Length: 219
Image (tube, rainbow, N blue to C red; front, top):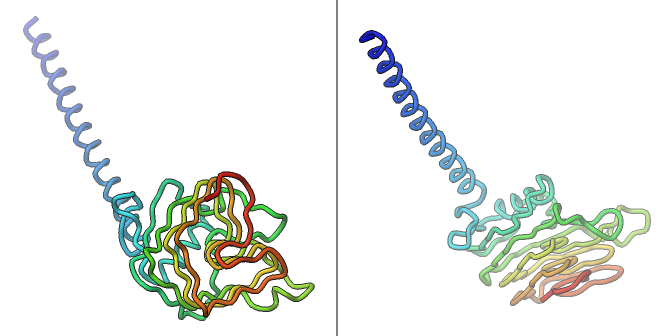
């Protein structure tokens, strides 16, 4: 009987030790996961984690190209996330510039999951040499783009503020604007400016700030 009691006590102690080990392992795993997420957020742009208190920092041409790639190719809408431009940015690379969340290639819509839906604050820093497409957009038979601008098509609920486009040329067939090509439901575009060295060329539906708007609740 004493042997049975001792055996049960040993088994119980082993169970307790196993539980402590698993708890420590879980804590370590969570810490590693948290660190990985933090590092990914910091490495995506020049800084920040995308929260309202610590927005992603957009400071370079590479940051803007990364943002366009995330939205256009990886379908990252940035919904509920915040981005803030922290410096003047000049496009110098010869690589073509893509609208963030655009353009529309077929039909007259672009799904929300392929559009920017976050909050972008330009903080009144300037963007230079925003050259989107060329005069082939005006030639019959060419691939024509609609929804062309710094942001091509804004997804539902997006906010764009304090963006300044200082120079560049923006070509498109329709829905062409320096800040936004096309705006959807419940979007806000506020305190944005374009400079005298910005040219906007389109067959139809063009504007300085926005080219066209489709939906309700826009500001």
